[in-house]
Amino acid sequence: MARFDLLISGGTVADVAETCRADVGIRDGKIVAIGRDLGAADRTIDAGGKYVLPGGIEAHCHIEQESSSGLMTSDDYHSGSVSAVFGGNTCIVPFAAQHRGQALRDVLALYHGRASSKSVIDYSFHLIISDPTDEVLHEELPRAIEEGITSFKVYMTYDRLIVDDSQMLDILAVAKRHGALTMIHAENNAMIKWMSGKLLEQGHGAPRYHALSHPRTAEAEAINRAIALAGFLDAPILIVHVSTEAGARIIARARYEGRKVFGETCPQYMFLNAEQMDLPGMHGAKLCCSPPLRDRASQEQIWQCLQNGTFQVYSSDHAPYRFDDTGKLHAGPNPDFPQIANGLPGIEMRLPLLFSEGFIKGRITLNHFVALAATNVSKIYGLDHCKGSITEGKDADIALWDPQITRTVRAADMHDNMEFTPYEGMEVTGWPTTVLQKGKVIVEGGELQAARGDGKFVPRRKVDCTGMPGRLAPELDPDRNFGVDLGL
Ligand code: DUC
Ligand code: ZN
Ligand code: ZN
Image (cartoon, rainbow, N blue to C red; front, side, top):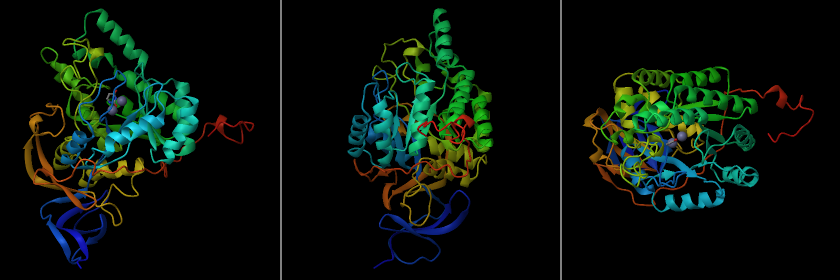
């Protein structure tokens, strides 16, 4: 009997620290050996000239999710996961969204049902919490965490989602106590509403004004407040989709001070800018997202913050709404910007863009690419017991990248349900040609070899903040608070 089910031979293997020529031996879906002259296998894949990297983990995407205004994203768990895997990913962590009045167990049952029958790759969920009732806080959230849903997102804006500072503290306290990570959409709601009102009063309802209506300082203020609230309790947080240098600096400073804060940015803030929204008619609506696209200078600043480690997470924020009455134009053919659904597609292009413009162009190392593609996310979101690196004992979730391939990005080549990509016409170098999940080839030669429902739910571990010392506010110090139980 051969020693391995599969051998990936002759490729260049990389993790977050090292790059070397090595073969990878796989048995029973796991990586069991990395080295040279490993022995016989039932099947050998020649990876000569290719990079052998962990499959990407896409940790911020909206799939088969109703927005707070009832709109369904255009991708379900089949098209969304297929698009992800063609972009070199082997795991997705979309959102299971609680709308007000819903019990979390019903929300999770709904999303488990959606994903289990359709996803072609492994998945988990983050919860979105919009209704932190006592039952949610003290029974449902702790139960969800025990079931392996160890992160949840809260919004500081949007009327139907917003949590106030006091609710945020409640959620942060539960997260801290039970070992979960709170993800925060940080924008100041009042500034957005005030700006939107002024713009609309003066007749500026066109899509391009969406960007103006979300001032940079709205992001900075909310990030600052979120960090203050979390810092007060010494609770870990991750600020999602950071779009401004001002916001990034606040995160960098908090991290420097040892706060338990992580930062995420997205390709749209590096590769796109608000000038591109100046399109005829309503076409600018295709680029409405929140936070919005910024200017060219911002693009470069966000790149720098990715390079210097301010952002540990790089996600697509794939939020696909079609340019028709099911999506962007649900409120009619000529909506004012507040009625336009927010979000861009990008799950398939996240990694090819970073590989090409980051690694191939020398802005980041291959090892930093691996960290951003998979390893950081696996550690931050508790997936590193099974995923996120080419390491003995982990799932054989692997993408082979060919650095010689050059492609022009075309919507027609994407596998999502959008017929639009904001990256249309860009030339990229490097592409994930072969993708494996648990040792099974699931993409090869441009063909999908996985079926609906092949992907499995992955319970995640609790948050690990090793190396981030943090500190409780003096008022919460058990030695100084006169024995009051604050539930931490
Ligand atoms: N926040 C997201 O994370 N995605 C799309 C829109 C939004 O506000
Ligand atoms: Zn958001
Ligand atoms: Zn999002």
